[in-house]
Length: 109
Image 1 (cartoon, rainbow, N blue to C red):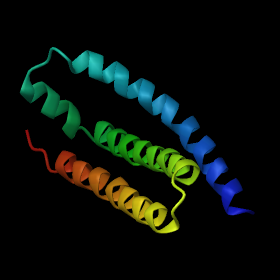
Image 2 (image 1 turned 120 degrees about the vertical axis):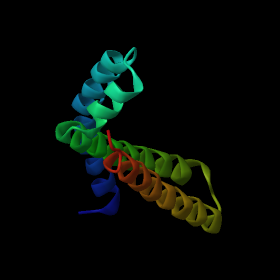
Image 3 (image 1 turned 180 degrees about the vertical axis):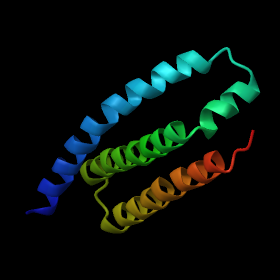
Image 4 (image 1 turned 90 degrees about the vertical axis):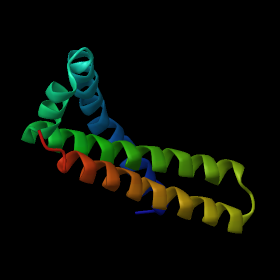
């Protein structure tokens, strides 16, 4: 399979997985909007919420990294600049979700 085909396939699969996770996240965000700090921390420390938020973050950053790398491919002509931009993008697409997941999993009530 060609790398371009793999990228397109990953983009479609991640967007299909991201849709129900986004819906779940929006519904729960509306529900916890007026809650106190302790109720929000309690929601975030429950096991299904931890898992779903972690999954949501990983897939959202994976999807955004794929999408932004496509923009780099289309609009950056210099190979060195394109490679540097993709490496920086991949670094942040990995570190930001990992740090956020670690913080969420270390929350205590």
